[in-house]
Amino acid sequence: MIEPGNGEIAVARQCELLDLARSSYYYRGCGESEQNLELMQRIDEQYLRTPFYGSPRMTAVLKRMGYPVNHKRVERLMRIMGIVAVYPKKKTSQPHPENKIYPYLLSALEVTRPDQVWGADITYVRLAHGFVFLVVVMDWYSRYVLSWELSILLDKRFCLEALEGALRLSRPEIFNTDQGGQFTSLDFTGRLEEEGIRISMDGRGRVFDNIFIERLWRTVKYEEVYLHSYETVQEARRRLSEYFVFYNRERLHSSLGYRTPQEVYFGGSTNALAEVPLEPRA
Image 1 (tube, helix red, strand yellow):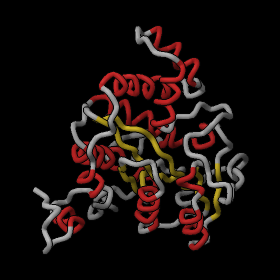
Image 2 (cartoon, one colour):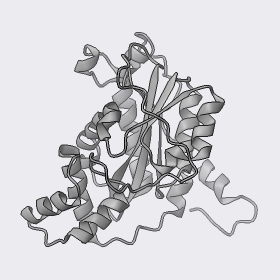
Image 3 (cartoon, rainbow, N blue to C red):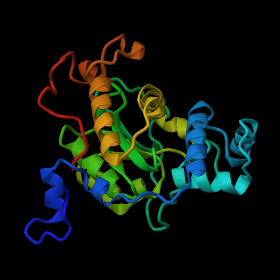
Image 4 (cartoon, rainbow, N blue to C red):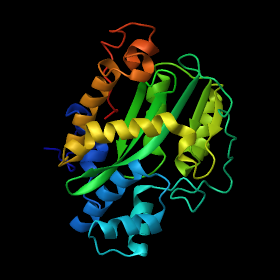
């Protein structure tokens, strides 16, 4: 459908006209075997239940499931997926040695209002024949998903796109992330500083410093991702777009007094975003 040799219309413009993410167009598969993709799915499911498991324990769990794996294989797959146990260890995405690491600002902070604290994080999403990465920016107080993006690469570009999408809606007082290279990059932290936003970063390996997004990942995985086998990036993008609209506008949260994130974020309005589609940019 898209013609790379078309001299009249650039590929980026063709993708835009077809409402197709450029990352979807360039996607050619990750090169992992079907067995490795199955192992990655099991690792992902186990990690949501026991985020404190490193590769040795994860290897033991997989062996109990009947998979003949060794520690080095599991360690490699966890590294590809961006999974790190909660205790300090080697991280998948190391910050550049020249990039600043900011202190964690939320230990004793009571979050009492929307736009007081936002958080961002990245997770792995399996496809039928590959995988992609999902980044989300979320308001801590309301659990409202402000923006999200998909990418076939674990780089900073799609994180910056998600940040810009969120900033088009509002601006937080504090922005919290982990210490991954995508978030410690000068482009990302510099953009926050331009907006006068205070930067907070989790302790190394401390997944629960960003607990609200960790809970979001569990919800998204069990209510959407694990129930479907996405054949393509386009399908994953479409289904996740539908799910996040449901999550924000319809899903009742017991922790929010059985209100929706949208109602809490916008102070009770149920149609404040009726004209704003919650989906990543093409």
